[in-house]
Length: 253
Image (cartoon, rainbow, N blue to C red; front, side):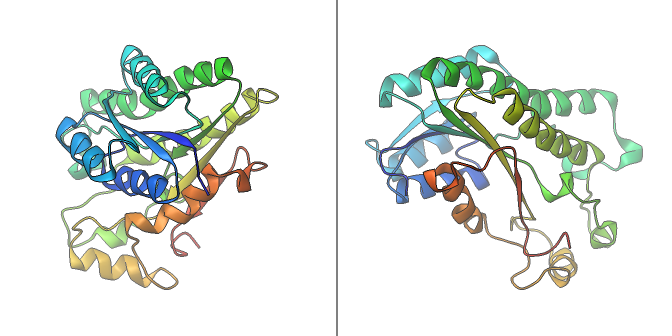
């Protein structure tokens, strides 16, 4: 489905980004892996094959880094057909900080690096796509940007659902719609996916509660998003624009 397509992925060596990078190559495309982790990025590049994958260190909070990422990727493969913004650089304590304990410095860092990074990457990428004459951007949001958290799922665990995470993911959905309309008549489309929870060593007590509210499988593996992302990258979805597709096994119903 992606033969000869070149896809740039920020956070491309992370939990979800790795699955997307593998899916691109599996479906005949080539991938530009952008990540702040050089060790993980180089390792993934070598596993996928240097003829099909290129790792470039990239920080989406830095416009110079973004421009370098896009320029080096294009120089290597000759073009960039699509991009997935999957990077999510969180502050050290975001995953364990309750609402009452949220500090201003952490909030500023999270909003800038995560929501600001999405805006800055979109800004530089849209300029790149305009010059190229076409493009396809996919943002990665979350069901937490669509639905309110199920706080009862977190009882008995050290996990929390940070308020800034919900705000950031809601913002990414809004960015997607804004850009889809902004890029009207420019041969650039912009969509978004909102995954449910992704398995990543969560405690069993949390998983049991989470899974009980889903339709069949429960919490998903990162590779369960592959079908949707490959579809959005392909020409089969060429008339889908400005949409947010929820992939959560019915959690948000």
